[in-house]
Image (cartoon, rainbow over all chains, first blue to last red; front, side, top):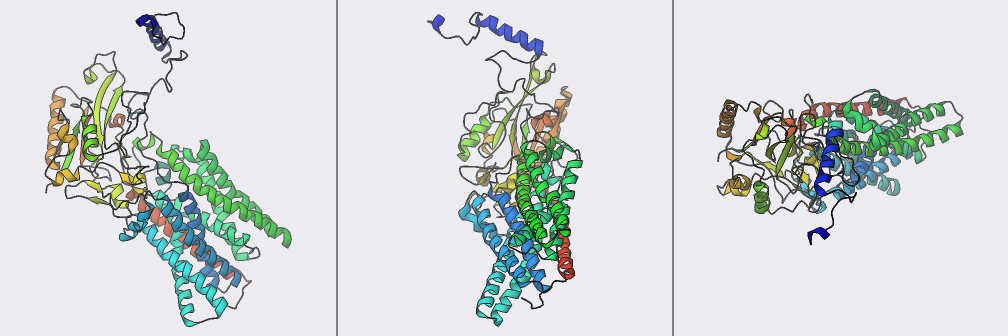
Length: 347
Length: 265
């Protein structure tokens, strides 16, 4: 009976014991096993050691966040910056249309942001659990309460302004509008960049080692997106928006240069592989392209200038979104790094 | 009630995985599925949402005598890994719902009736312990058998350990015991034994100490774990700077913009 059993022996000639010896000889000779059909994936295997850690199994866990989170970073950043633009534009007596559109962008972001966050939760029906405590030591708790204040202010401002346009001014509307505007400005300033704190103060190497840059980087990204959306809505003659868009694009160019010019292992997820190329794509779209187009628009005729600004805006908006996707993705790649979390001198 | 801790002694562990089984049994945890890691006899890999105790099978380059093996064989040590229950716990600090609390026994406990599965604790654990269960949606990790401790019992893993590799007791007593055991091991010529209890880092010590042989990194124990709250000062400073820049930049842009509509909106 036993003779008729199939033997896992591709050559069909060797007895089992000889086959085993052949494998042993090859391993001894070459340090690895290459015989077709016998080589287990990944051989030679890493051993547990100070250099390899525990078989190179990653120490950290990846953030379980889904697509909603990078999209939220984009929407929230743009909405926060738009609220600031709307309030300042109003205080300085700028174009009414610009103020109105900026407020609506902020209000739209205020509706979309919580929806995205709730949808990402493992237990969405328990989203209110976020509001049972306020913890200053938790960037997410601070962020949630900032979002609550911001949304309330931004939505109230937009609707009060809308009602005033439609039915004429009245005292209650003016109170709501002004209070909402002040709130959306006060909360919009941190709201536009706190997501950099949120991911910066974590155990993930690529995030926490860029912690000093992330909030400014994300703030500039949000500003670029807000200016871009406003210009795409037609405000392509505003010199203030041009200046802000140019400032954001120049900052994003510098940030990209900072990442590219430094040779640090923790920056690898931003430079290598798929996450590296997504980061580069986002960086080029948000930095050099809008910078070039905006500078070009300064020297072009009125019609061409607006054309340049439209394309600069598209580039900045898409670049901002891609940049947020890139950072979240890079964080996942970085959490898979088995080496960096085992190093000393983390801080 | 006294403040308690685990002391896991890898020099006594025989890799029987009884702790893993007892933990799953007591806490009713899902199975991990049948996945072959392809290396070593450890097919679980790491602690996670469905593995609150995890026995590491540390196969190392052959060192004669290491682990009691002959020189030409692979050295083997085993170590049962668990949530470290940090003194400064990243997961606890950042949990936005207040679901994660410190118990009267000093352990870090996720209240399952409050957790809403935001996943922020997962990114904040410097030991990669907490994980969101994709099926359930909430985050899970070792509870330090809070229910058993409440009833005056020791955690299931410590109870079941047949070699007393997992010791459970009052934390200061265990620290003394760890030093005592270390002296004994050194006296017996096991010079590479050492205690892993990162008290000099921002984690500030743990309620799960380990006696390991050689470099703790081969057990995936980080030499310098940092609680991520230490990055917050820099982060919020940067955030405040960014906000000030945005405010001043926007003010400057709109004030210098001569093209004003003086009918205030």
